[in-house]
Length: 551
Ligand SMILES: Cc1cc2nc3c(=O)[nH]c(=O)nc-3n(C[C@H](O)[C@H](O)[C@H](O)COP(=O)(O)OP(=O)(O)OC[C@H]3O[C@@H](n4cnc5c(N)ncnc54)[C@H](O)[C@@H]3O)c2cc1C
Image 1 (cartoon, protein in one colour):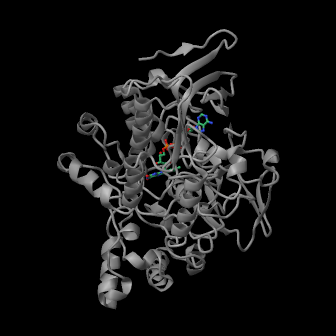
Image 2 (spheres, protein in one colour):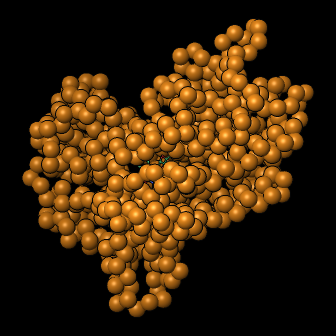
Image 3 (cartoon, protein in one colour):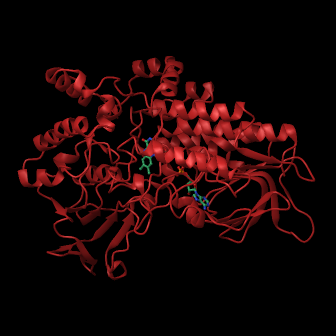
C-alpha cells in the first residue's frame, strides 16, 4: 500500500509511517507483525541494541521465566510452534532472548526496527490527527497511530542512596546488566533487594562470589520453581497439545496453565487441606499460588492458614533459626506481593560466605568508598548489585514527554494513578494505543489478545475512513471506577494490604500508592474488550479528517 518515505518541503528529515511502535519486546514484535500483515507501514523504535525487551535487558545471572515456557511463546503461528523447541520447562533469559531473535528473523521484523534509539517525546498534531515523535539522537517521525509497547517493567529504578558516586568498586542494576558478564568470582558482593529478580540472582552467584551480603528490606514468600529440561518425549507431547495448552490459558484467571481451586480452604478438612497444600507445593511453577483454594487471595483467615504453611517450609530449610525468622514474611499476606519462584534460595543462607542484613533492624545510611554502611555496621564490598526493580506500569509512559491533544502529559494525567479505558487508551490522547496488558497475567497471552484488538480496531477505522479515535471521558471514568473496585477485591492489588509492593507503586518514593494492575480475570477482560468492539467500539469517539487513509 504505502511506502516509508520522507515528507514534503519544510519538513525535511521527518519520516512518515502509518504506525509507530515504541518498544521491540514481546508486545512490539507482535504488533509490528500484525500491522504489517494488514498492509500498514510500521516503524519500531527500540532503546536497546536488540529485540526482546525484558529478555534483552535483564541478563543477570539466574534470570528466567516463572511462566511455563510453552505457555509463554507466541501462539499466532503454527509453524513457529512446530519449529521452536523449548529446552527447559522454565526457560532462562538466554533461551528466551534466542527465541525472540528467532521470531524476529523468521518474520523478517528487523528491517522495520530502529535499535539504540530512545523516543524522548511525542506530540499529537490536532489538525492532522497524527503523532510526531522525537528521538534522543534528534530523529523525528510522524504517524497516524502511536503504539506504546513500552512494557510494564522496563523503567528500572535505582534508589537514591547517598554516596554511590564515592564507591570505588563496580556497581550494576540487574535490569541493565552488561552483555559481558562481570567477573564476580571471589569478590565481595552486596545485593540490594530480595524480590523475584534478587532471589534468582542470589541463588546463582552465592557459590561463585567470595562473600555475599544480602540487604533485605522485606522478606518474600518464595516457593520452589521445580524446573527441569524438556526431554524428547515431553517435547513431542507439548507440541501435540498446543491447542489444549492455549485453550486452557484462554480460560484460566491469569492465563497461566494453573487456575484456582473453586473450593474454599474451609470447605475441606484440615487433613485434606494439608494434603492439597503439599501436593501443590510439589508441583512446578505457580501451581502453589494460582492453583490454590480460591479464597487464599481474598479472605485473610484463609490466607493466614496457607501463609503459615509456607513460613514453616522456609523454617525447615534454614539452619540458623534467627536467620530463618528474618527470612519469614509476617507483615503481608501470601500473594500480596509477587511470589518469587526459587531453586535453592533458602539454602544460600546456610552457606558460610553469605550474610543476611536486615534493613528493618538497621537501615542503609550511605554508600561509602569501600562498601555499604548501615546504621550499625560497615560492609566492605567490591561490587554492589541493585536488584531494586522498576517504576512499574506507569513509569515507562510518565518518564516520557508524551503530550496529547490539549498538551497534557501522562505525568500530569496519571499523577494519581493510571486512568484509562480498557487499559488501552486514555482520554485526551487520540490514536495512541497502550499495548501492555497491565493485569497480572502470563503476559504474552494478554499481549496477543490486546494486540489483536488494537489491530482490528485500526482495520475498522480504515474501512470507514476514520482518522481519529479517542476514548471518551465518560468511558474512562467508568472504567477507572470499575478497575478501582476490582482492585479492592484481591490482596494482589489492594493498596491498603499490599503496602510494600511494586504492584501499588510502593517501591518508588513519591509515587502515589494505588492499584496499577487490572485485577479481573483474563477471560472477563477479553469478553469486555470483545463486547466493546462488537458494539462499534462503544466508549470511543471516532473522527473523519480532510484526508482519509492512515498516514
Ligand atoms: C526479570 C523478569 C522476569 C519476568 N518473568 C515473567 C514471566 O515469567 N512471565 C510473564 O508473563 N512475564 C514475566 N515478566 C514480565 C515481562 O516484562 C513480560 O512477560 C514481557 O516481556 C513484556 O513484554 P513487552 O514487550 O510488553 O515489554 P518489555 O519487554 O518491557 O519491552 C518494552 C521495550 O520498550 C522499550 N522502550 C521503552 N521505552 C522506550 C522509549 N522511550 N524509546 C524506545 N524504546 C523504549 C524498552 O527498551 C523495551 O525493550 C518478567 C519481567 C521481568 C523484568
